[in-house]
Image (tube, rainbow, N blue to C red; front, side, top):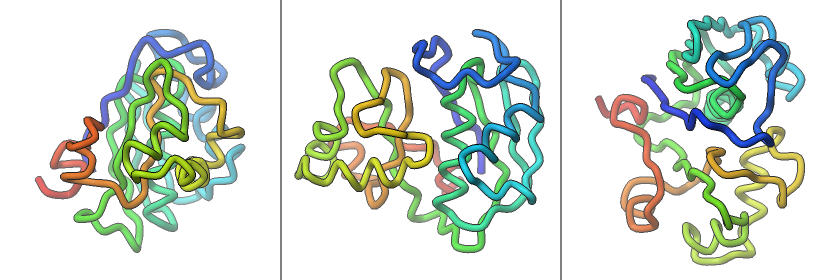
Length: 171
């Protein structure tokens, strides 16, 4: 739980949910429809939008789904911050997934080499970010990707982004 900051000048490749502008998130109902289009069960989720800040409240089925929902909303056009108040039955705040912010020139292979020591493990990153990623070659600068099993020291050593303590459940 906590506030998750996102890149504001998103690439044109960023999902543009109906009603979003460069400086304002799409309306809550449009964000909900976007999450449903990815196949997420959002029956227990409530979304509030205040300009470029989105608040997620409620419960979801799994930690993986929780992380994907936060990233799907945050990677959308017009979203600068996501306040995550979602809970999941298997959420272990001591073991959050790592997050990598894509930069120009990144590939999933290169990211897998950096964090896992083996580029062939790019498929794990691709799978962990479905359904937001449709193809392993379709990533864009500023996008945040889940890195399952990567956290703490490994993330810091690779120069990746780690969630603040309050998101990681340590605050």
